[in-house]
Length: 207
Image 1 (spheres, rainbow, N blue to C red):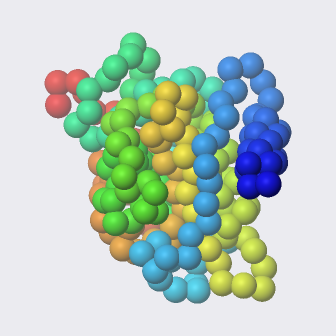
Image 2 (cartoon, rainbow, N blue to C red):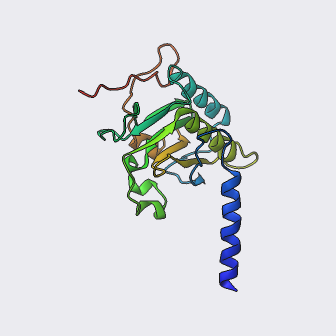
Image 3 (cartoon, helix red, strand yellow):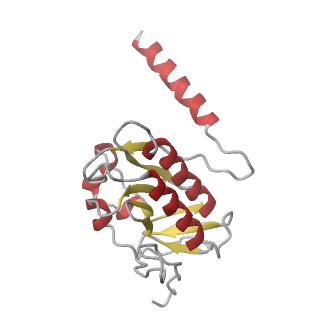
């Protein structure tokens, strides 16, 4: 009976995974996604969904000079490329007031901020994805977690990456412990806008 129950659960999970595959050639199946209520991620009830929508737009604008459908190799700071694809260094943070959208390699996240099952995983310092895929993941986190009405807002994360799901797309409260712990390599600001993250210049290989 227990085996039959496990089989039913597995079948349902498999069907849901198939349904989650985005349309289009070369599309990537996203990894697990979760909403988070940890005080390490959201320290108050004042994270506003509208701020997250603005942060998503800053994500789009900050990377607008890059082809959104182009596959990039995303790297943790200090990691060496393993492919001939163009590279993008992480962490990359886009914030507006109470909400921050971030792209970071899970290998760069201090383990005490991750779920216990993820703490024991060995994450690669690089993986492959397109900016369009990562932006869509961030949109889904905002829609699923932050915009629940009539309850305390949650934040969340999504595993992404075509090789080993080593890229994390995150939405958390600006100024939260995880936000303070994860220093982006791009500390510049857009002039005259306030707290928006500036368009990023990739470091040279000689740097």
